[in-house]
Image (cartoon, rainbow, N blue to C red):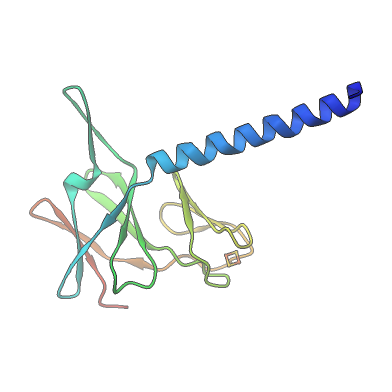
Length: 148
Ligand code: FES
């Protein structure tokens, strides 16, 4: 192997290990919950966002909620203690299911990206994500699915 091939192969190896690391990190932080539907509401306990490290309580940025009657999952972001967003994980470009990476959702089909409030960050999608009203009641989030 000459020097040029060696450098080229090392470059591909580095890119591969960086991609695997990013994939593992995203898998480690993504937690998919099974949500209960009561009436028109999808119920998500606030405790689903909690993690503990020793005596300290921490909060996940988001949880992904699924239910058998939902065609797509819903990503629920914790913006702060009193503010959450519920985003339909269907790309507004051609309908592919989105993937969550930290504070944004990405489309595996053509690369559109959306923020944690559903705004388009990069196209080709040009419409914001469908969102659902969220209320907090008795330590639970009630995500209204009336519009579905
Ligand atoms: S379907 Fe998502 S970018 Fe095309």
